[in-house]
Amino acid sequence: MAGEDLTEKVVNLCKRRGFVFPSAEIYGGFRSTYDYGPLGVLMLRNVKESWWRSMVQMRDDIVGIDAAILSSPKIWEASGHLAGFTDPLVDCRKCKERWRADQIGDTCPNCGSADLTEARAFNLMFKTFVGPVEDEASVAYLRPETAQGMFVNFLNVLQTSRKKPPFGIAQMGKSFRNEITPGNFVFRTREFEQMELEYFVPPQESGKWFEYWCGERLRWYVDLGIPEDKLRLRPHDPDELSHYSVGTADVEFDYPWGWGELEGIAQRTDFDLGRHSEHSGVRLEYFDQASGDRYTPFVVEPAAGATRAMMAFLLAAYDEDVVGGEERTVLRLSHRLAPYKVAVLPLSRKEPLVELSRKVLSELQPHWQCDYDETQSIGRRYRRQDEIGTPLAVTVDFDSLEDRAVTVRDRDSTEQVRVPIDDLVSEMRGRLTLQ
Ligand code: ATP
Image (cartoon, rainbow, N blue to C red; front, side, top):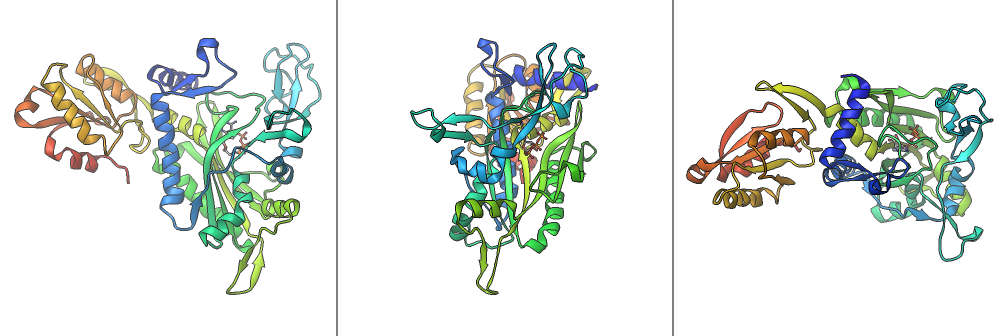
């Protein structure tokens, strides 16, 4: 499928089925902002839950935090964001459009004019005022990344969790950047969600852990269903590196418009802890009681976007095929990411089928997020579930009243098997790959 086609199809599906809506649509939308609908909120939670599971739940060397979005502006002074978190902005003198100088050539992509202003640094942080007085002393910023919340809590976490390097702090949540040119649906928005890990290591081990996290993070996307040939690890050229990094690699995805970043993995050295130590006057170090060593750990940071990852998972999962001579759209989402794991579908809206179907539903609901749908023909309902990626459908028919069994249909193969209601939960558990 051609690239533009695929993006358009996924964006349409998102709108039509309730994954993602343009924000404030009844007012004509609002500057590339989006709202997550009933299915989108489930899928985004599943993306974040899968990240948390692999980064925190399945490990004993990483703990989580949830830091404030609005916090002291001193953080951004120390981190270098106030001075340096900028993109080069140019204006087209002819059509008045604004562009990121590093993303365009010498001419305006809108009107083709070469009459562009000199690039000037534009700070991407959203500024606001805290409290009732709007003066310089009350200025604060919405966080442009979650990372700093982990650095400023380094000592709190170290002391309360009793971890020692190598150990990590993980966080997911909203970040805000006043991007000059948001776009490509939820790939680049001004409000988005990040999933970041700061992994603190003895300085001499930084390179080793960088390699380790590059491998781990790439594998996470593959495990969740992105084909390996749609992913690559791209090391940054030396002139691309951020001011704090001695080595960065991006996990990139083959988007319909070309390769682009999914996640950045950076060796941040002791830059952040060092800067916050300097600016706060509090020594952010690790003291090893056994050896008597005191040092500032180095940091390896895998920084991913939850909303951007969700888009990549949707693009990779979108498929069209022909089943029984009929075309269908199917989202081949990993079971972990699918909004609903099971759909319960009574063959007819008549009693006592509905009563039995609701009983089946209530047996499944404590285990999995389920959908219940009794409208339209069964064929159309199957296709609706295929289109939103539901791995399994359970059909309750008139025979079910006699044989106490239901039909289980698989999204990918469309195969159907008869399963006794009493065995349904264990049958589903066996079929769903959630571990
Ligand atoms: P880009 O080069 O695409 O602007 P970045 O290198 O500035 O991204 P990081 O600061 O490394 O991004 O942020 C880590 C991750 O956060 C990115 O890999 C991406 O997944 C996500 N992210 C960053 N900016 C945005 C945005 N404006 N919208 C959606 N996700 C974003």
